[in-house]
Amino acid sequence: NKMDTTKWSEDRFNEIVKETSTFIKKVGYNPKSVAFVPISGWHGDNMLEESANMTWYKGWTKETKAGVVKGKTLLDAIDAIEP
Image (cartoon, rainbow, N blue to C red):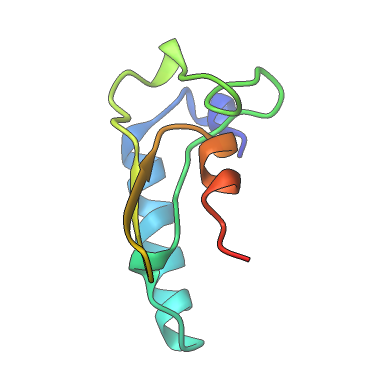
């Protein structure tokens, strides 16, 4: 969230993904099963529709029991959560 405060920085997003992935591993989860989506709640970027402010973002991929799932928005990530 708050990608607007970083001027939609790809470098900052990648830094957060790396730090979060390390933590996820430490607590026993697989980071490949997590969808990382850069969003701005204030502006609505990548929440329901792709953002023109982050053209560098090509979407997320995560591994599930059913196979690989892909998406681009937070809504896609929520829809991909397995029950």
